[in-house]
Length: 126
Image (cartoon, rainbow, N blue to C red):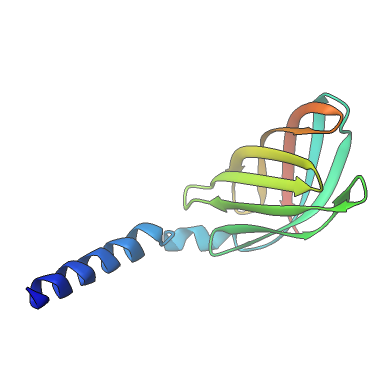
């Protein structure tokens, strides 16, 4: 019984590690990027920010909106497909898109105290 529990625990642990690991190819997007979110609907304007990628994970390296620091989170898959979440105070936006080794682009939509906004984003490797 203890041997069976140990084997099950080891199998579950190995499965969790394998499922949570990003493909090594996602590392090709690692580095610092300059990103701009352009509003096409709503009143959010143009929002420049710094974005970093490490091991396929997205994080903010700088930028602010309406006096709040921008926080970024998300992931880039080995294929370049990306999901991004941005938070600046009470404002929250979600974005999707794609990165290549030198550029990225996609769409975003968000909400805040002044209502809904949406648009496109673009990024260039710094």
